[in-house]
Image (tube, rainbow, N blue to C red; front, side):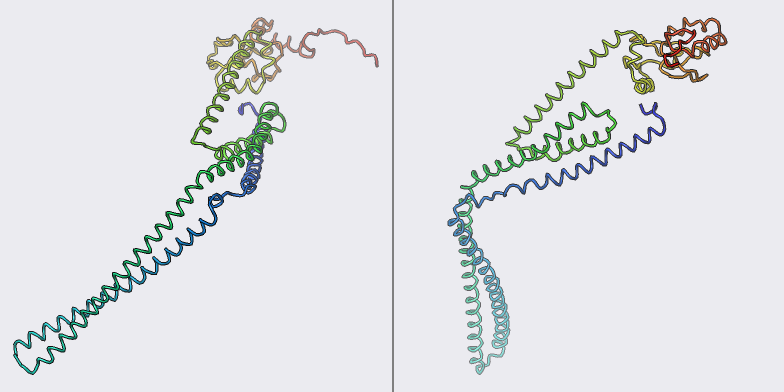
Length: 390
């Protein structure tokens, strides 16, 4: 249809579509801000609300103490391991020094060095005792860390038992809250869809169509973006069920609309050519012709073939000849593209073929058109009766 519009009208329509887009965008932003605040109407439920407060507090306190004791035991264990490593290094170094000295003692075999041998042996025994003491500290801290870890596990198990006991009631309350929030959203979006459906059916071609389409776009976005994702799932049954129902309803409406369209087309094709041409919108006819289809039945027609003046499918006249100049033109044109003469309402392909001007030539056709043009169809030339006021 855009090919049949005036240039200024095209740009006006493009601008109005921009207005429709902006109007729908602002409405969508406002609706999104409003819908996003809906969950605040409800106080969010927590699992702790369905657990024994005293038992929960005791279990969490035990868990906190056990975790703290475990952390302290780990820190002490790290220190004990460091001390044990240091004691091992000291003992090993003293052992190597003693071995070297002992080898020298055997080589010299000096009896006066026997007290030194005893002293060094005593020092080595002391370092070995320190090493064993550090190892005992490591083992002690390992046991403390193990006890703390087991205590934390027992406290966590007790807390998990309390949480599992409250899980069913918590999930039930959570589903109920989600359903209430969804119903709040539905209460807002469903009237918008109803208004959008009414506007689409009654007002989409009115002079206020940019605002109508903007509101329709806003309602569609509000439904599919702000409502559908929040539809309670219940294992997927609800969402799939709603999808099946909506698909069935839309499919039924589509089938009925197609049947109504086919019935209307059959009734229209049964009417006379002039009657069909009168009820056919001018811009719509030009748009269909630009697509290479018949304006009446919308079936393909080779409009470039100069031998085709009628639709071979429904019989509607597609081309006729101008009365004054006999130029072949579109039967839906309001003026002749060759001479600019206006097309008469009753003129069609059959009428143009039987017009006296067709046999007498362009000159006679122009003369007869000049004689008939001043008078409306159905009137004859003659004196005009004076009005009562005259």
